[in-house]
Image (cartoon, rainbow, N blue to C red; front, side, top):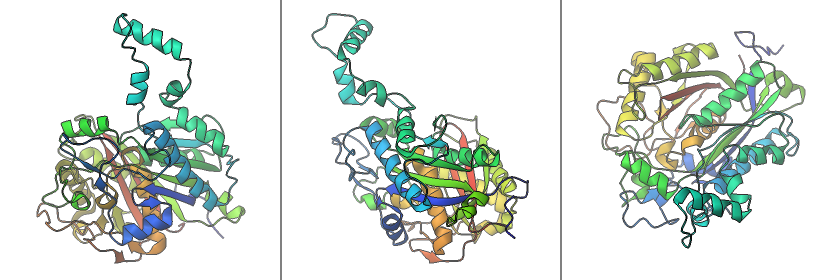
Length: 423
């Protein structure tokens, strides 16, 4: 008889649908084929002029209808596309989903064409008065809707028929994982039998590029874009700004099996811990990240020896990769040197708000396909970071459980533990 409760007596949470969009393509099939072949989606930026910028490459999604229409329209299309694939795979009604929506998306701001529409060069008014007068005269909803943090989730809720107030969240680079955690917790509390968790980010704008450049966070390896992201390598010089989306349909295992759904994996545990050390840098001793990993293992009811693979945050920045190695080596001890730890960001770049959801989707596929995607561009190992990064080529392996890390700017740390099958 199937056990529908976990070690703490809570409903076991299953995944019944997965959707993905990255710079590698639309859908799980294309993304998985590219990812496991070591293909990079990082390319020169063509969306805006980059002549005087230090970084001129990205993992932008340039092939959707809204790719040139601004961050908000693109984030919506990314979210809708991934959600449609996930809900379709789950076999649930794509217009009457029937559970809550948790969306991770980037903070909103006016795009330049919207800023110009609010600027009247003929006016003699002071700045604030002019802005108010022009805004009142526009009588358009577009600007209002695209600058409201919850507008994308509202539209998705209408599109898929989710229930209750749609939740929009931003916990920096951990956002996608947090959206999944909120879905898991809602099911565990008995508030619903299913939830739709999405991470989407189409905010690779010129402003974002400049801001991250000013933080010295981005790679400037422009000459060969596909070689720019090199997590855990000695010559890593920053992350590559990217866009994408990941969506999971989460259900209680009991409800999923009752309706005959195919179970794609199990969300065993979630762990989180805030780091108040610095706006961008992690605490030097790695204690918040260590605590997040341990909390995820405890929540999953698994020991450190029961994790077969780590889907690393692995941004390719000097600071993050060093901190992640410190946290993993502290938790897993000597075993970490032989335990596979790879980074999808070596191929797709850093999808920011979407990263945790995208990487959770790839983690689930790793278990289902018994293939670990590689960390590409690993040609110059860092002797201070002793990890089995699955260098440059995929690896066939039986993977029963995965730890997926998301460590964000501002001290947001969220870790997910996934399993191939229920206990």
